[in-house]
Amino acid sequence: MIQVPYYPLKRVVESYGQDLQQAATRVVDSGWFIRGEECRKFESNFAEYCGAGFCVGVGNGLEALSLILKGYMELGRLQPGDAIIVPSNTFIATWLAVKAAGLVPMPAEPDENTFVLSRASVETAYHHAQYSRLKVAAVLAVHLYGRLCPMDLLREFVEDHDMLLLEDAAQAHGAATVFRGESKIRRAGSLGHAAGFSFYPGKNLGALGDGGAVVTSDESLARVVRMLSNYGSEHKYVHEYVGENSRLDELQAAFLGEKLPRLDSENARRNKIANRYLSEIKNPLVKLPLPARAAGTCLATCLTDCVWHIFPIHCKTEGGTSCRDQMQAYLAEHGVETAIHYPTPPHMQKSFADNYKAVGYPIAERLAGSELSLPLHAFMTEEEICAVIRWVNNFKV
Image (cartoon, rainbow, N blue to C red; front, side):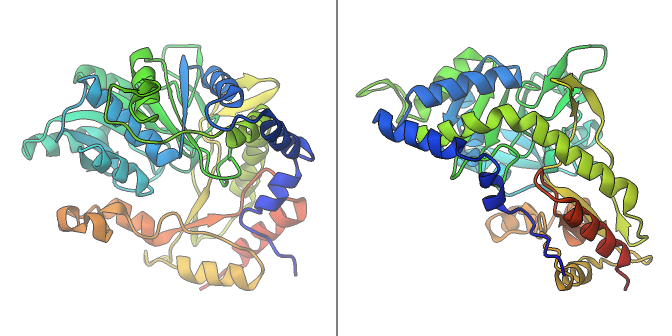
């Protein structure tokens, strides 16, 4: 029986041959390990790739988000106690970043088909905040599973209300779209005022350890974030802000620099596999995600609004009861490793339940109870793809 791993990191690393080892040797031989030439080069290349003016490498994706919020507080765009609209279904890091900055998460339910925020859900959350006498100062849109939020619609809303539009792009490296009425292709990282990225090893663009970045075209924010992430300092022993230590080290920057040129082609491979799943999985117990939408081409590679960081299916019986756990156990018995993203929504976690659980967010709770992530990555073999399709189709309750 073939074994299908969910995401075999060793296979990913081996696909780069000697490139990553040579990058490591280059860093070691340089004798410079923090904020050196490798980091500067990657920051420049990633900002250009995203279509933004600036990139600041930081320690991880959570800190990227919190530093954006703290930076805008230093710039006077946000005030302590302001509400930030966040999705009710997301990895908890989104909510943690808001709390870490002294701000208030204001949950908005996702669209039940795209799993990301809609303009209607944001408007509803905004009115709920007003009813609670909270000032909403920003929307933090999460491109969950690698699918872009409808950022052109959200941009119209925040402009009408003098708010910030921020991206949690931790799962959306390379995702692209075209705003209505425009022809320019825009990538994640250039769709709002600022974006936070994670380079956790399992991401579409992953390091070999923790790493993150703030991407923005706001020069003032980039300068403040760079200082905040370096003890509040731009010049040694001169500290303008109460900062912290959150820096992308040279080794991870060098690895990311080697991997960035292949990101579009690897995303294209993910899209091809996703299309196989979408066309060949036919099981009435399985709800498939929506297809990706093409935004344009780059280097003969199709750019889409979903880069399939995760391929989520939802498993339910005809009566609406979740059969996710049975599906996961069945696939495991037949050698297919899966994952769940995410089994418990943030508002039901102990860290937030006292303030949010009583309200309840039924869409997030339904999605959390039925979601199952199938293996999907750029290094899958034909035999593995066929095995996933076969066993998903064969599942019964």
